[in-house]
Length: 92
Image (cartoon, rainbow, N blue to C red; front, side):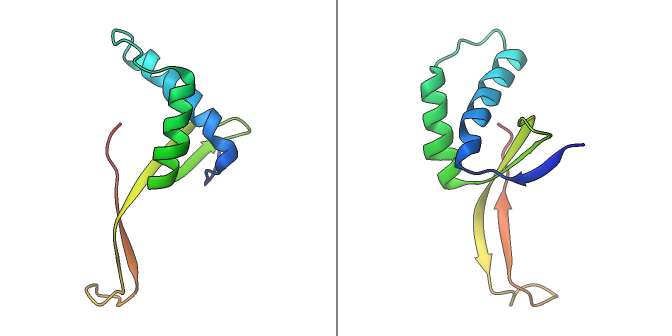
C-alpha cells in the first residue's frame, strides 16, 4: 500500500531521480538538457521552495505532485465563510 506524505528535504534526491527517469522514459526522443546534479538543484531550489510537494510510495518514492499557492483568503468570498487556499497545478 502506498503512503502519501508531505515531501521534505530528504525527499529531494529521490524526486530528482524520479523526475529524470520519467522524463527519459516518457520522452526518449528529447535530449537530456541537464545533469543529475542540475536536476537535484532544481528540485531543491525551485520546486521545493515555490511549491507544496507531496510524495507517494511504500518506502521509495514512486510519485510526486507539486502545487503552487495562488491565493489565500479569509473566507469572506465563499459560502462556508472559512479560510481557503487556491492552488495551481500545471502538467509538467
